[in-house]
Length: 184
Image 1 (tube, rainbow, N blue to C red):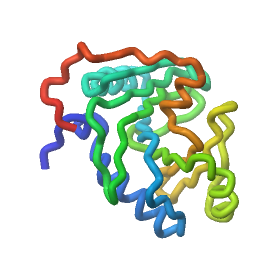
Image 2: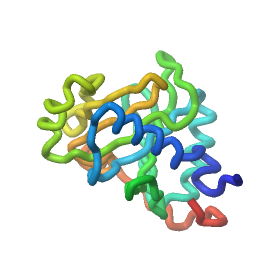
Image 3: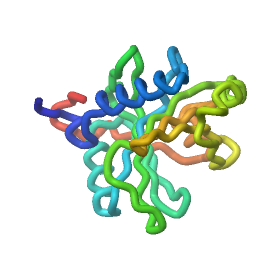
């Protein structure tokens, strides 16, 4: 199988998502009908981060980069939505640069799912299954479950794109960038 477009840059996101979706189902966590916020891709080095960021930008219509938690983080909004299993779709990729204190392998690491205003009830319902809750500020307090393969599903009240906007980060339009073929 030849990978094209976004898959060539970040790997087979369909297989990655399918695995996490099946692990969620196996854990008894129901996410049917909940919208996706984003996919998160990790890099091991800053040069790799810069290379992946620049490659992904060719498939994006908007991009924001800022400092968060002591490192650069890019939020990339794709021109074309990625179609996933069971009717799920996603159009945002989060790409954090590595921090010296943590070493992560390169690759897809997590998915973000929007639970909405029901997040507190969701957290209570699944409290015995969830790994924890992160506190990244007033607009970003996702709960999460990390599986035995190190991959994570995170649950948000609002989308990462909305969080970025509420934090005051500015998205740059990327309409002038060409990516050759526009297949995702």
